[in-house]
Image 1 (cartoon, rainbow, N blue to C red):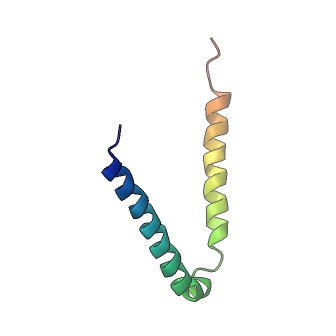
Image 2 (image 1 turned 45 degrees about the horizontal axis):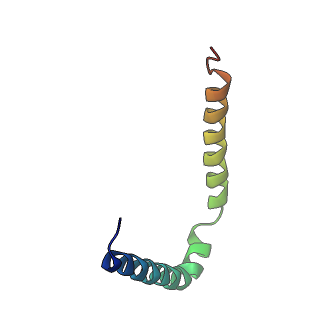
Length: 64
């Protein structure tokens, strides 16, 4: 399906991408703690909204 070169490129890209992400996140960690307090509540509200939509879908599903 994929050639050897494509697989090598994909693995190298993933390793470099994840390494850069970790480096940048650690660099900005202090700034995130200062300016983005309480954002977990938004995440919880978003997940609850998705759960409600899923529940509505299941409850209104036609069982025929």
